[in-house]
Length: 462
Image 1 (tube, rainbow, N blue to C red):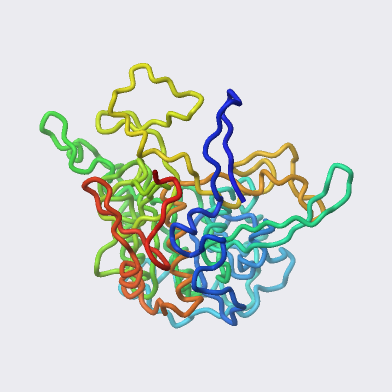
Image 2 (cartoon, rainbow, N blue to C red):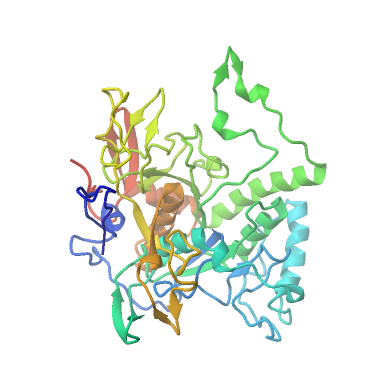
């Protein structure tokens, strides 16, 4: 598969590149796009990744079989969750094989009370949909989660495409996530969740005994100082001193504090992979900035296809970097512009434009079929009777530290699926990941980039 971007003039094009270049950079695939030193096998007990994000398009051809539709939970529509992919008229969710004896919330009073309620909700006899409320897993909500899930665990497949003549033909979709053998449990939450919803999400990740937890976004905790401010000052006054957080009641403050501790508790048993942020934050966004040598929280930054830190990614308090896209920047610290862009105008551009650092390569991932995803479609639905109507909207350009964190979660999952690492503890998994990383020297920065075999290679590097 390749991705070609054409300029508006039609006379020049961006470089052609392999849509799986990020897997080659991580050393997971070899030059011929075959597994590099590992093989895909049927797993009796697949490595389980809990993805706390939006919902995902479970009918995408490359995601069929990747997402556990019996365990995936929607915390957007109902306080204690609904099982969105079970029939609404099903009598009971059945007997779930959960870690009922978990002590993950010990010492956290609010979380302990929530856990007791939650266990009652998840017990045999409960209805799949809470009070018959429709789960919020429409494709309209699912673009981010679909792309994230594809990078983690998409499977190559053969689908069927319906031609304009009405005839159906087989079509190969040779797209793969990092670990095509894993099992994804999608835990979807509100776009602006309260602490209780997030506590439930992390409690559920522990209850299902996830091997890896992926949190590819940030939490807007009102009790914490805005991390982007860092140590910046204005006229000698620290910006942090000028910021007044919105006050909340005592119960809310306690819940937010418990959430931070719960995330660390969960990370002791398995790695918790977090996106580090897309605004060049000084110390990574929350909860990625909780990462320390004493827990299994992994903060992930982004590196572009030339081996340079992506312009939007910070560099402090980041555990590892993984491939992603890049972005133009023009400020007092750096000028990094895309001179191939049809909108590029050299007028006023300083001579120190770091164009040699900019990469036009995106990360390609799975997309919600039809008009609801990142890539549009002329059809209300891109699928008809389980056959493809058009190819374009099934895949999209993606990026940010969200994409990078998804690749690292898949990398860890592949290690367990192939027996290369047990991931028995969060700290142990982080230590193993760092041991697989190579320091990429970029100016005065040293970026740790994991590689399955050998050293990372960058396809856009000149």
